[in-house]
Image 1 (spheres, rainbow, N blue to C red):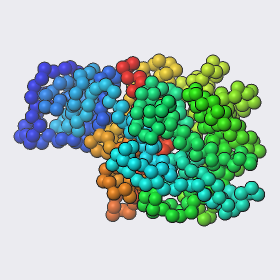
Image 2: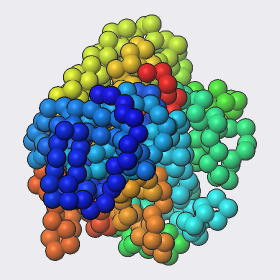
Image 3: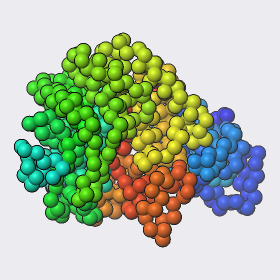
Length: 571
């Protein structure tokens, strides 16, 4: 690989194109080719920079906006991936560190333009976090905060009915409670405790780990300019809603707040279906306890001891309810058809809750409980949460007492690096679940935390690879975040964006991503999905299994982009 003295390479219809020593007769240069995959936002000046070529390539070139060749290199060996059904070669231009706008070219095809520079991910980090403002329930989004994406308030949730599954002597069926605020969970208008919990924890952890980034953010939300960072203001919107979902009489937590069926694709203010709190569950109580306990620690460090104390108490109340009701699993009532979020394996939730309560209270009973329910960490999902407790323990002031747990965490992240080295697409995943993009984001989050624990720069390089994948270096050729890159989702499965009358989607939302879990969510005449899981994605509104948005999918994107901003230049 070497830098080249500038020379002109004209991008036009050519009879003969000479690239290095290869002559390609009768071939046109393909602009923005889906065969050359790059991070469409760009790469930091320092650190690893890698593209992928789907076509046979020996040499490759990096060219600037004017067509001048500024760097050349040799493609690495082509590798087939059975999850994507294609073969790719890595194009490594990490040694090139000049800021600017460039294309990556191989075999006569060239990528879309992308940037090399410093702090490139700041607009992305801001937009990913501001997505939560646009998802606020019961709040108007006026132009001074929402720009083009304005709407009226809907779902005040000040009189929510108690569903039969949630009724008891204190709240008979049909009585009402107030549960305003929070965020719409996904493309629908429901609010779900178990999914809210991992989301809220991840945002709080990003504030904790990436404080220098978040303390300097100005998202232009109503709370901007007060004494708190915007990420904490935004997260408090949801924490305060979560607290309304606890029954003050017994400490139990309602599983979700929802209509009986999904609303049509209309704006929030146009909906008129009754809304209900549905069944208390042990999973909801434990997730609530963990999140509010962690929230109490974060809020306490930002000068609100009264709220911190209230959060800790409601977390303790939820924990006590879970002890008295250890296996109340959520069962979807016959008249409810919205998201169930069922979970019948609760050891991980108990470990997470006990870990957070131990750190919040220092009480030995919680240390005993976490030791009894410990499970080795894996990449977190809404229903697999032990890694959250692990991260809290090994990054806390009590970390020296948990050396074995730390070793398990590092072992898992080492395994992720090994899997990434074997992956043609340079990611750690070996399967594509629903919401696969959040799995990539959560992998990246774990790698950044591993870097913070060890100082090993391999983890930073691996986390950069995860973001590269999300921003376009994947087999679909999509930058999966709305409003960013040269090809990003235009038709998310999201009721607000579908109904607001604005062609451009709200920026900063990540699509769920490829999978074959539900291959026929759209009619075959609308879209013919690939049978390969890594390629099975459709940018159409009906594809709820690949193109929906969700709060828990955006949270690791917030952490990953913020973490890479914080550590930029440390590689």
